[in-house]
View (cartoon, rainbow, N blue to C red):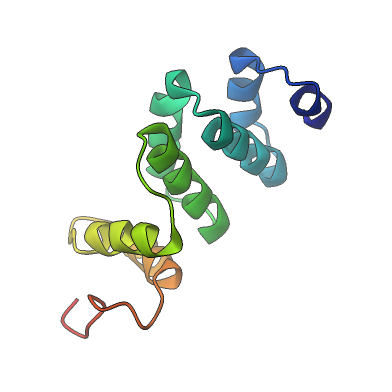
Length: 116
């Protein structure tokens, strides 16, 4: 994967295959590649993976950042924290995902209150 990336090759088929790899580091690098190259054709796969229940905090953040980059949104820490707060406000989200979101939001975020 890294050799292809260094060579400037952008095989969407290979990147999509790496999204399904059993190794999280390979999946993480595939998501990073998707974000960096803004591979819009892989947006549905990235969105589907965001809904998986067994994601690590690292993978959730990478997938959410990739979605924002694909959509042309700002991906600063502050902007992503705002996105995570918005998602956190959805009571229908599973508890595990809500805990993960809390880990991604700085404790000093202005919208992070006890009521949330």
